[in-house]
Amino acid sequence: MNTPPDPPPAPAAARPRTDWSRRLVNWVPIRSLGPRHRERIAAHLKALDERDRWLRFGHAAGDAQIDDYVGSIDFNRDEVFGIFNRRLELVAMAHLAYAAAPEGGWRPTMVEFGVSVALAARGRGYGARLFEHAIVHARNRGTDRLLIHALSENQAMLHIARQAGATVRRDGPEAQAWLQLPPDTLGSQLEELVESHAAEASYQLRRHALQLEQILEAVGEARRRLGASPPSDP
Image 1 (cartoon, helix red, strand yellow):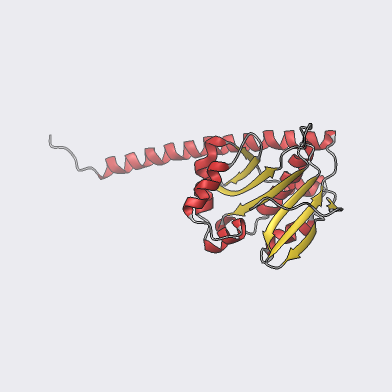
Image 2 (image 1 turned 120 degrees about the vertical axis):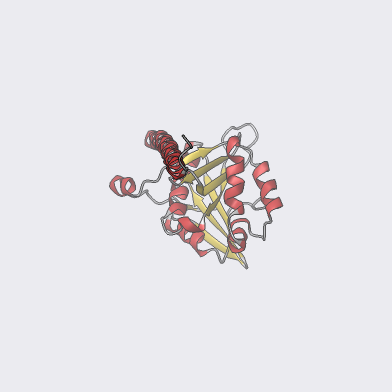
């Protein structure tokens, strides 16, 4: 997306988060991604079909354009989050693109949110979970406003924004959703820290389980081959 115009004077404030019991039931491990994940990010985005690419980028992005986008992500400034399945495939991701901090300051005042979910992982609320996670992260970084710049036909994304209390403004085929973020608190800082550690622990458990599964599969395959081998001559 291109650099957004100045925000409206009074974006809506973020609505309170859901209660802890409901959030625990719906908890999904969301892991921070870094430069070493560029290949996985590119593979996830290239697996999107033509319409999903259109909704994500606002234009018919080809593979070369996706490579350019992934290569341009500044992990020192921005934040990228991902959800992995049990095979450790990236099935959903969000990109928080932070605006430059005002002159003389260090806290960015605005951040833009973009999200994509693989077709096989739809209907599980991953987009909403990534959006909630992004709000907490942006708050803790001292950011005042969150922007979603989407096509008007992207009803799923705009619904998530409205559910959070965002003000949505349409301009022909495009729409902008602005959300005023509350200041960070000790609770929001602890929430992000706990969820980050829990997500990393979940990922490592899945990685070890997958490695064990692959070892057992290899042993089983070796046994099948030995059992199918003809007996050797005496």
